[in-house]
Length: 232
Image (tube, rainbow, N blue to C red):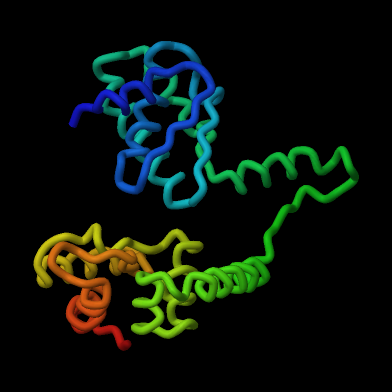
């Protein structure tokens, strides 16, 4: 599928710019094409391009897309072979991973060990504290109220917000189709390592927020668990 005019402008611009785009608008695709355009034009090589994302999932997706594009285009443009050969030097990572690398590289200058670790349990406690505050502050919002009615406050925090931190979730509204089709997709994703599925706080056509949330929980998820032999 060809890029539209706005996406093409985002790929071709060569000065500092902020591109605002919503979910599902093709941000990763545009960034991949921008990366490839820089390589094609000889503006920079793989080790000279820094591509940062917020999540490990997005970083892995971008890495995979760019690598696949390189392997496909190298047949038509042999000049890209050099970039493909040194793609192991690609700097495509999350912001926190990039910053941790800077700390490790500069630790010796300050007499510090080059071992940088994060306390995941402490980070999760802080994330839960902030998520709980967010839920309580948005309790009167219709979408949040629907989640609280369905899952309770703790369930909304644990099942809706915290999974976003792990990068191992899927928006249930991307699983379009019949109950049987969506169930099969869920089964495949579970086998692939996805831990949770999030129904976003808006209604599908012809239904309410509450109905949409309940349908995934009462029809799709139990059917997937039966196929996978999982317990609730």
